[in-house]
Amino acid sequence: MDYLAWFPERVAELRTQKGVSARDMSLSLGQSESYINKIENRRTLPSMTGFLYICEYLEVTPGEFFNANPLSPQKSRELLRELEKLTPAQAEHILQVIRDLGEKRL
Image (tube, rainbow, N blue to C red):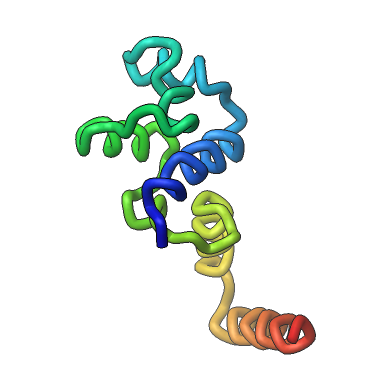
C-alpha cells in the first residue's frame, strides 16, 4: 500500500465522517487554520505527536486509523456496544444474519 498517498485520504475520510471542516479541525488541534488542508493535499505530514493528536481528535485509535475497513471505526464501536447488550442466543442469531448477508453479497 502506498501510505503516502493513502494517509491524507484517510484523514479526510475520518474528518468528513466526524462532520467537521479542515479549518475547524486544525484550530481545535491548536494549529494554523491550514494545517489539516496541507496534510490532506499532500503538502506535509504530521509528526508522530501530531498524528496521535489527530487520532484523539477523530476519536480513533492509531490501529483504527490504519484499518481500511469500509465501516467507520465509530460505527464498529457502536455495533460492538449494542452486541454486548444481547443475550448469547441473540448474539448468535445476529452473527448468523451477518453471515447470511455476507454470503448473499458473493
